Amino acid sequence: MNAAGNIAEKPAYRERVTDYYAALAQSRDPVCDPIAAQFVPQTAEHRREPAETDDPLNDQGNEVLPRLIHRYHDRVLLLVTDRCATYCRHCFRRHFTAGGAGSIGPAQLASVRAYLDDHPEVVEVLLSGGDPLTLSDSEVEALLAALDDETAGYVLRVCTRVPVVMPSRVTPHLARLLGDRGGLWLVTQVNHPRELTAEFCEAARLLQRNGVPMLNQSVLLRGVNDKLETLSELFRGLARARVKPYYLFQADLAAGTSHFRVAIEDGLTLMRGLRRRLSGLSLPIYALDVPGAGSKLNLETALVRVEPRMYVLRDADGREHRYPRTQAR
Image (cartoon, rainbow, N blue to C red; front, top):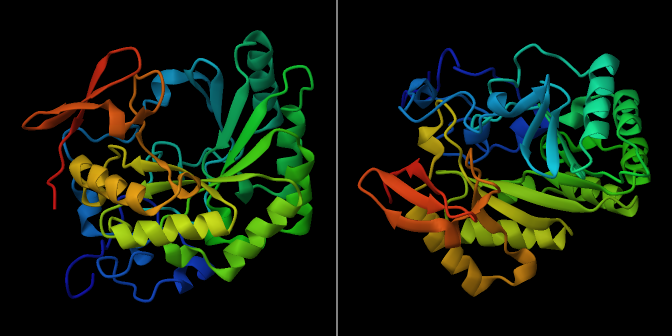
């Protein structure tokens, strides 16, 4: 534990970081450094708020097969591995990630394909975990082959932090594998401008040269990127790297992550500032993923009122959802 008492001696969630990503931190103090905050455990992780859970998006309640989650009508989420190159301290899928399930096998893939064949309404498959790009090239190739269907024409989203935390993994062979699969998008999670290194940009260029379009989903994190200047630099930098800022997520109610959550009022203030500074190309949607809503909620339009302890949000079908208030700055 450091002198300030901020580093957890026994992490509540597994600790792992690549040498490359650790070197981006200018200090190992997670209170002072926005990179260290994303991989160094803190004692605050042991504090569990009443609304927090290990499965805040109710993956398990929407699991139709082992590893296959069908929450939204036309798309499914497939957890292809429980392994990440770096375990983020704000992870919202800790009920599965680093849990020992390992990588998906041929029999499970066959079951997934049979389910998809029986559900023609599904047109998009999100590949996540864990991180799909921690799989070997041969495993990635087998995964893509299992989901290759010219008739269905699935759109694939590969959700990964590998270009951010281990860009050397993006080799010419891997980029060709991904680029050869039509309808595939790669979705990164860059949370701070310091992550937009020359190595990240080169990995992005390699993917793009092979025909892989890229989106980014940032998470709004207290002490990491909750300043207007930081977000402006981040989203402009992503646009320069030809990675479209897609979502800025309000943090989910994952156990032990309350120290990362930003008040929605502060998030809306940041979005107003970003709208004055950035073009639509560089501007993401400020969103929250809420169990039971038919889609992600755009917080600039979904917030209907603020109660003493709760934000009240309305989805596209008029249903109300509650999210606990965080102390505004």
